[in-house]
Length: 183
Image (cartoon, rainbow, N blue to C red; front, side, top):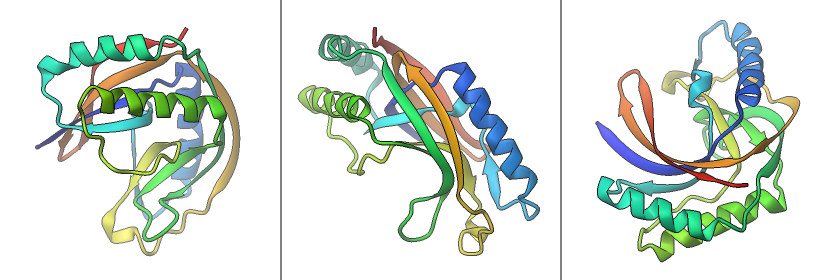
């Protein structure tokens, strides 16, 4: 069982519902069941992977994030497509890709800087704003018949959430450990 902590931008329920509707349409064409689609409750935009952080540090981290992110306002975002991801190598997920925006990049940079200042080493991953809608089954990653689809979906997020992810045989189970308002 693997447990990881991460920071994510919470998506409004209306946006999760619309993304779920797109995923349902695509899954209807997935006759070979190559993708294990996630429940809409698990949709989020990861800002930073923290690894395995001790629970006693979470409330201190939350206070530090509240102080450091107080200048950030609610973050607007736009989805442009649903596509296999990553683009290089063998795709592992079906993702809703977000357009890069100054507000989103600034929030991600501020979040990462705050976490590093708190003494936590971030997992090294390039920030590519996306929401995981489904995971490709390993046997189908090279023969995927799923083509990118353009979508036009906008929203505003008002909250960063500290999540704990526990990997189980049935998929990840997410637990919210704290919230930081962006208002």
